[in-house]
Length: 242
Image (cartoon, rainbow, N blue to C red; front, side):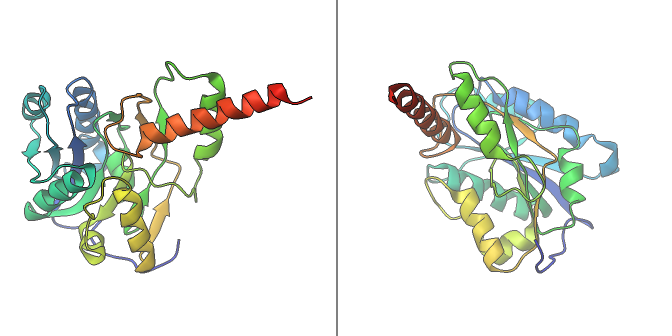
């Protein structure tokens, strides 16, 4: 998408990875391990990468795992994923971040994830997601998702699990709003309204979970549940048709 080019993808400053987490002890270790691999990609040429995890009302062992992986623990003052993402972003900006790479605690990123974001030559990067395991979902739901996701350049999707922006662009649009859900879509919508350049690329793609227990209302888990209900309803209607 054409638009204003904001600086910040290359040059002095920290590359920051932002992760909101609400009781993610079962999954965040795998996420952080994948981010560690991305930090070591040769195309980054040893540039400094810092990881900021916003601990949103965590009562399990998430905080200990975050510390064990050398990430910065951020403690939002208010609950919710939008507030958590904003708190992580503010901590990263205070530490001198020039690029903010966003993902989720139940997501694994590929080794070239950070390098590809910095190479996208845009103010904002939007990438697709794939699901690691479809346990408990019917094959029709999986096929419907794969058709909907359209993992190709120019795709229309915004996923907080696979998003990036320059610090300059983040400040320009006013950062994350304190929304219960949809804070990622809202951020990109405001960037588009400002005329910033958005790179909607098929690669890099991240791998996320299809868990039933949602962490955010109307988030990805809710979307999959809604998609499944639609697929099952369509199957019943087809079976009932003469």
